[in-house]
Length: 395
Image: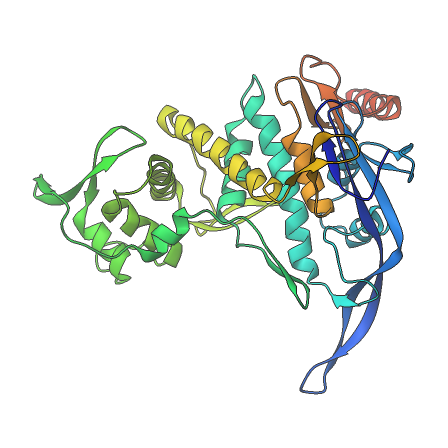
């Protein structure tokens, strides 16, 4: 049964919190140049509330005030929303409440593009968690999800006049941004070519970096080398950090080395998105990973996943509940509760699996030992069987 405090009950594997119901509207907004455009606004009423609870059996649930479940598996419903579908996402918020707590009876403009990126980060974290614990590892999916969480622009979003949301950005990029060009590296000559000798954490041995190629990348003046993306500012900073930045933590050095080798060998990354994956400057880039790079990728993927989740569950505040005389937690908003649902999953025993029916977007919770269950319901299984039968008949 819920009360006025958001709480987590250790003895019952259970936490709950109270959210707000919200309303979205399209309004005209005029700028200083007297031009008007349509903007999306959100408002919340103080009188209407949503009650949530979490348990190991039902996941995050919408309940009545007295604790009876009205909708279970809210995380699964959220994950099943079609990508970049504005109507579906807004309908979810109107039914279950907004990510953040808002001032009551006050209308605020929403940056919808940033809002979509928040949804993508939650989905990417869940999918990455699934792939990292699979017995059959799909390195391509792990690579795309890891690089999306690591390299996509940091989410910065205004919630209200007094609130802002900032997403995960790894501290390694503060290091990369601040590193300076130095010429103190050991240099050797092989077949009349000069190389910098770099102590490498991916291959655990020295790596020889061509001096003239490094000079072209670091200065942005391509005298000897010219390939797609060589003048990309992020690639330049990563290359400079690879040569010069060694007094950092092991994981930071591993990330720098991995990014350098991946781009240097496979193509410079132009962009990474949740829907489309990795976009290279060179359109025909086909990337490969050797065993050392695969090993490094798994370590980086686990690290990035932990940082993404830890940043959001850190907002859970421990308190002692005077009503139950038990330790409790206070959840500030729905976004934290969704991440806390991920935090509380047991990836070695249960995962969210996407329905194998190509026309279905649903995710469903399944035991990891049940490798045969590929569909969210009988209708999807039957639809896929009919589709397969028709394709065989065509052939």
